[in-house]
Length: 233
Image (cartoon, rainbow, N blue to C red; front, side, top):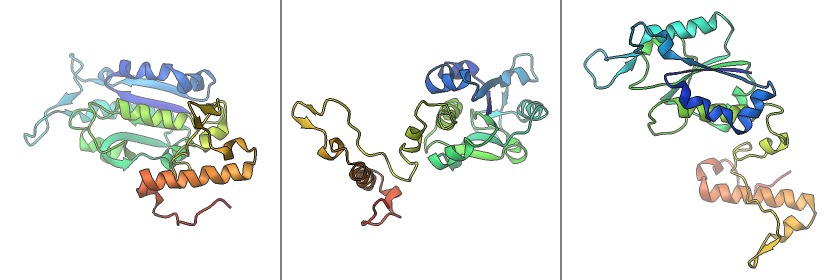
């Protein structure tokens, strides 16, 4: 996979991508991450990338021409499966969306800033607009990093135990069940006996029941389609 990120602050991004799973995925050749400083496409000698909005509204807007030049230049080099814009009014990012994007070959992410980008960019270049939550960030860099992390960790070989990713929260529409490790007893607090039983069928059923109950308590919005009698088949 190749991931091109268009940003006003590339230095903000590089540190995040030089650690943990994303770093290892890049070293293994599973993903190539390239940052593009939009200031390099500025039409002014000062490197400005924004301008005042028509109509006299407050704030600034990312200008159409430098952003268009950057996107078009990249599109001449390769075909992109998605050109994503980090927008507060975009569709909400989710695990199924991360799963879908992890199957793509080339992705481009435009990090929003100020009052947003000139609408003509959204109309003519953007194929998907994504939000990571109903709140406002200083810029789209954090949103791009969140999406990249969620997607890259799903690439085969990115994490040591691929089955672990399949058991993550939200993969089956539920949050994850409680987890325990050694010792089996600490300060009188015991690990549930079923997890020590060695009975894998009972353990699987316990994990599922716990996931359903925890989801019911903490994320009832996710549980509405699961009946009270749900169980593993």
